Length: 135
Length: 182
Image 1 (cartoon, one colour):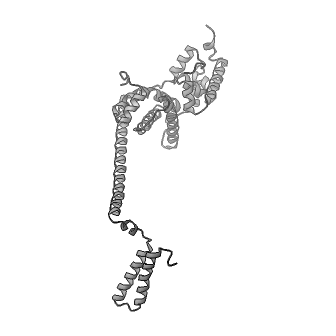
Image 2: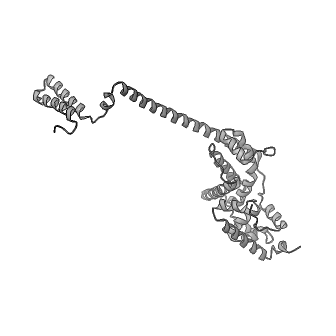
């Protein structure tokens, strides 16, 4: 409390307070309704927050399980993680050679064996020199 | 009821944050009269005041769990009641079917209609900012620091408004008898 707060004379204060009171009393039924509504709101908020926490926890656990699985498999098969990379040029080249070979075997005469061999050689060069190609 | 409730506001709030919804009732009964009086002052209409009371306590309930009280409850509740009262009055003004006599009067208007001896008339003569501070201090019983926090103004401004208001009241012939030395 501030000590240098100015004061009103007691009689004026009493009159001021008496005039500030609302003319009607609150009905008890309204009190009960407000209390019940408030308690229900708090309980609902608590349940909602709990549900959000459980959902976030389960999502985090699922993400962790996927990461752990990938890590575990990559430990057993070192090529697994790099094979997952969509832009691995060696795998793309081999897949293209394989695709052309199948097309040719299916009767597509526009594809020559030389084209397939070129792609196969390209994959070998990529294996030796990386994506930069031959020196 | 709150009569037997010995727990402080902070203890009740902590209980509500833990999920003990029964702690809401004592908190409500502790501040319902204060909120109702304030709501009635802002609306000058009993039904509107009851609407404001409901909305204020529902606003409070929606804060749980996770509510942290950084000042006193009255400091927290004051702007809620004030803004809710303004919203309720605006909403009522937009309702075209309402009978004119049911429309809420402003505090100034009701004061102007009162008899000349009425204290409300004297208060209505004060600047609205000064009148608000006087009512918060002497009717709502709020400390100067609480008023400053609730109105988001510096403490010095609260003090100067209060001094100015009291000086005007002392100078007013209609209430001068109260200030006369005994």
